[in-house]
Image 1 (cartoon, one colour):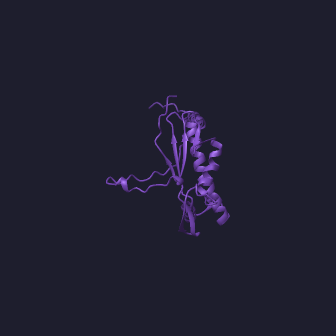
Image 2: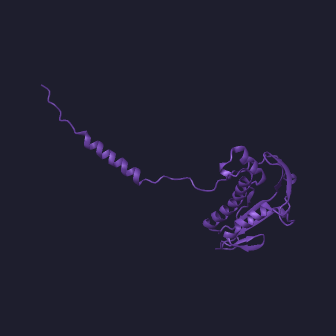
Image 3: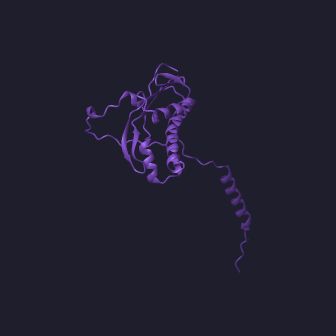
Length: 192
């Protein structure tokens, strides 16, 4: 007669496995993607003639320089990061058609009809020694300025925030306030 094998009580193993699973779920951190959301332009065609590129007038460019000491020079004047958003908004909106601010051209924009659209471009250049925190803060203020203008326009036109608009409405608002932030390659100015 074959001998009977002793039975295991698997209930305690399942409990231990469940406790281990709970432990790892509670103590594990999930990596969240962070960084800047940017849509890069497509690469230029290989046979592109660089002499035929359109020239941008100086008045249409909002120049932001950040040095190795995390100090801003905006349009040739020192500025604090917290004042940058308002300055960028005033530049891009140019509400009084100031001749020192960017030009506007009339375009037929869906939902708006013939509308003045800014030709403004924001140019940002950092020093190699600029800290990451300042770099992100400056980027946030510049992108925030464009987003604020879009939100204000959406509120005036539809009484909703920009994020609540449908895709076609958002495209129309983007056409009036395009996100043109040009970032030049960092330069090394002195040693840090």
